[in-house]
Length: 193
Image (cartoon, rainbow, N blue to C red; front, side, top):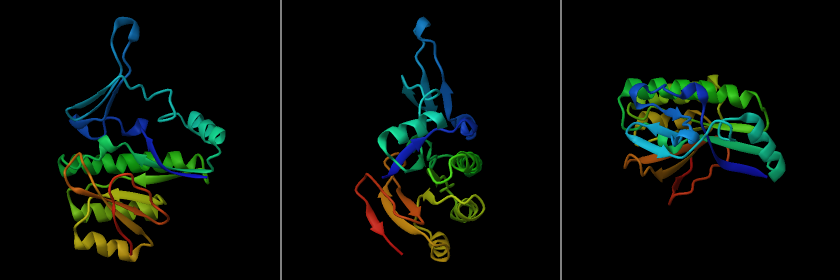
């Protein structure tokens, strides 16, 4: 069985988008201080990612074994798409996220694959990071916002499959690109090369 839709929170990506975060606050329940996950101005209260399968590889693999899942595709937390922030911050986050994701996937070859993050504010930078993620980091999948001919030319060179879907956070369509089968949960408009 293959799980094509699983989110991951990567320790190395925390704070990688500057003031936008993401930030993970552990909290202290004894003092009434709840944990939270902050991205920009949005705060998700009551979520404790550390010590869970979102951040602990051993817990994730144990859960996969228990459920009989042979391969899991890890995707960025949707809150961290950062399509509405400045290009420099988004690029720094995408590179940090993709490096950390590639390192995590390398710890469990054959069990994990990854969805890369792209700086969608700038089509040229998105292409550069897409190439780096697919070729240098060997990521099997990438996520991005489409519409640029240069980006689609890049897809025609790389062995990728594209899925268009709405990104409710930014109001722009998002694009899931994969070298294998993709899975989307929101009203997709599929565009296959």
